[in-house]
Length: 529
Image 1 (tube, rainbow, N blue to C red):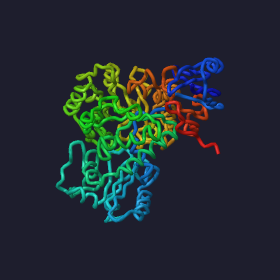
Image 2: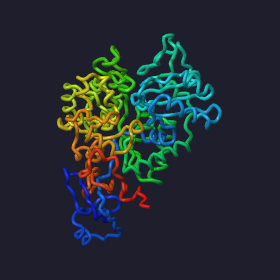
Image 3: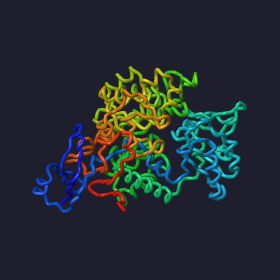
Image 4: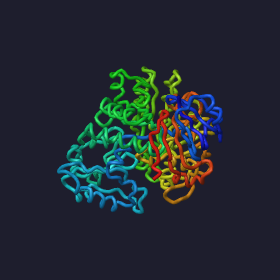
């Protein structure tokens, strides 16, 4: 008693262009694949799913995003498409009229690198909008914020406040904060913000999951559990939505600050249920390129002698890694700059994981020849975000200089050297649509000037899709039952109206999702009316 899928093209993703004619599943598992007539004769089919010419893939999974952050983007004032500081300020002026007295004005996603005049908004400009409402604008990379004087006062930030480890309070010539706070300095503000209510938190998870399913995603690896009121409260919000309301495979990384909370609640790696499974210990080793806080081995080309900000240096990472290893736990380390990656690699070499689970380095954008060899020699997965190519070029060349740019965002080189990779969006920093990520991996075309950057690093369509199917399964040790259309694998499918192997890659983003299937159940169906 199961479902037969037939009537379209079905890519198994076992190898390039491998297809099957029909798929039979029961209770969320693929039982058999083959010819439609043979499957009809062999099994008791109770549900026909005719693709009507559409195209089915193993379910797409985003290997690195912030699910609740994506929900916040949908619910907050979104600045990511605005093309100037003036447009941002006008949007804030309109928004402040909707707020209750003393309510925080929260907006996300500004990116000065996309503006004709790439400047940083000042606290004085925000003060003019409202001296009564605390205002916080989060940069698209989430490694910087701009706040007004009211927020600074609430946080107790004065000219005497010292920079925290891993952060920077940007100051004017008088030594006063400009309202621009980098990396860990953001926490000074966030610590005084009112906590999100349980109702709002649950609503945010709900809105995010619904949107991810709409975009063809059957799962995502997220890092949220250290925020929004802490580990138990945030996990509970997920578990009240999944799978009670939706089926979606959320794999939740555990920030090192709440690792003890996980242990004290009796959880370990992989605990939490198949729809809210707990993952690797999350650590930040540096910042981001946009705010020049990614940790480089040489100074920034456009900001000498700045080499970025190490959020955790080697001795700190070693201590955290030892703690993880004590519980046979993998780590997932945010490392963008090559110096940050070097520190992580050294630590993994010193404290290898011997139980088959996978460590991951998230982003790994800036690379050098020595690092490439080191990464080829250790069992680590690189969590890459292809969309960064589309959004970071050409301005990243100003940050790095030509000699480093040519060796960075080197997705094809990673694969050619046998370095395992998984693909994600880092949403809400980038658009969460997996088709945009696949498109960027194949075309490497900038969204800013339309040029192709690093043509030699372009992936094939098969390689790009594999990042979001086999790659995302491999990094969480589910290569045996996820990421392929094959007997014994989960019945998770992304069904598109067009064939990505036949469509112009520059038009992938125009392809519509027809159906999203998780564990054999339709979680999204395009409205045909």
